[in-house]
Length: 121
Image (cartoon, rainbow, N blue to C red; front, side, top):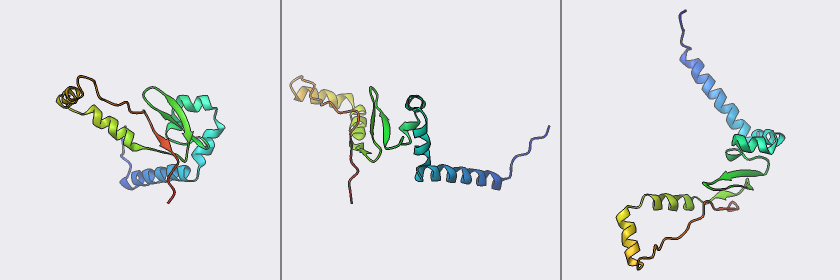
C-alpha cells in the first residue's frame, strides 16, 4: 500500500478551522455551559475545570490543595514568581542569610496561591 501525504493546504486549513472552533467555544461561553451540564465530580476528575471555568467558578490546584474561586477573579502571579526565585537561590546566599539572622532560618512562608477580584479600569 502506498501512503500519500495530505497537501499542505489541507493540513493548514484543518489546523486553522480546529483552532477557530476551539477559540469560539471558549469566547462564546459554550465550553463553560457544556461543563455545567456534566457532574461536578466527573469534571473535577478530568481536570477540565482547571483550564475552563465551570459556570461562574474555576478550580485551582496547588501542591497540597484544590479549591474553587469565582471565574472573574485573577491569580496574583507575584506569589508564583517569589516561590520560583526562592527555589533557585544559591545555597551560599541562603547560608549567608542564616548567619546574618543569628542562626535562625529567617525565611517567610508564602501562600500557595492568591486570588482576588479583577481590577476595574
